[in-house]
Amino acid sequence: MDIDNIPVTVTGPGSQPHEADGTRLEFISLPQEMGSYRAPDIPEPEQVQHLGGARATTEWIRRALERYRVGGEPQVADISALDAENRELVNQILGEGEVSLRFGGPLQVRMQESVLAGIWRTFYLDANGAIMHDLIEVCDVPVLARRRPDPECVAAIAGVTPPADVMNAMPILSEIQDHVQSWQAGDLAHVINLTLLPLSEDDIRFLGDVLGKGPVDTLSRGYGDCQITSAACPGVWWVRYTNSMGTLILNTLEITDIPLVACAAQEDLDDSRQRFRELLEPYWKELG
Image 1 (spheres, rainbow, N blue to C red):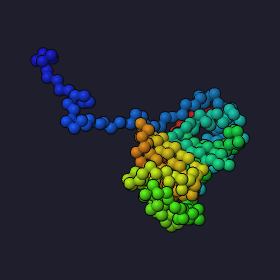
Image 2: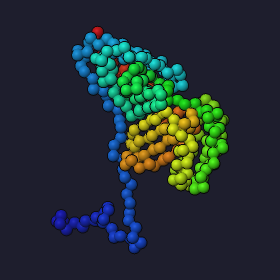
Image 3: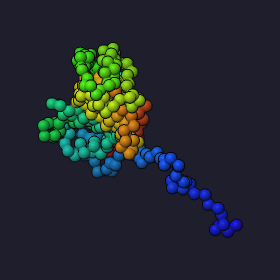
Image 4: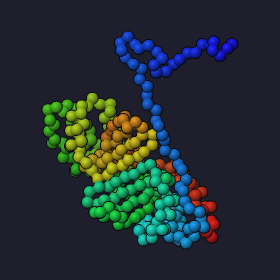
């Protein structure tokens, strides 16, 4: 058969007639990118033989990864005394991962996960944004990120009077108060899925005004973004998921000391321990 005589069937957008009611077929936007592990780009061993401080730091990290288990005591080292050259090598080895945190207010702290889950850089900043203290934390989430639920703080929302245009927010505030007051260390997070509830923009705005803004902001990047913001009452968190197009797809409130999505799991730490060992073995072995 000649190729010109082969029947061709066309499919896809524009290939079908419009519906009689004027509706059009909509297609779901697919994710555009996904984060994945990439080994850090670091110099050749012979170029950094003199950087003993960086070598000692990486050896501490290796031992900390061996010691730490989720739920245990975080491992913390202060590397503020390292000179610029040693610190730059540490920065190159650790790289920058998908989760970043900021602690605001009178105390300004920036926290960044490395390319290896469970290894964090924590920077205490002065009023001008200069680094005063440079820490490395090996843990599921940095120490400052946790905010234990505080029953005394949340009790104040009981007497709030909503405006007339707020219809469904008050039962949510009562639910938050009940779970903050009953929360115990080790409890699973209580999640209120606002996306599934009949809430107006006025309801959402009122919830935001009553709960206020806390000091911790977290951004976790992946297929889309997950933004985690602490409320003024410790232990109450806004958790918002957006897709790769920047559209809000899930809006929740969580009552817990830290939402699980911000934390590295034990499997992640086990993987980081193996990757870090593989990364350093040929790298430092040549340094004798």
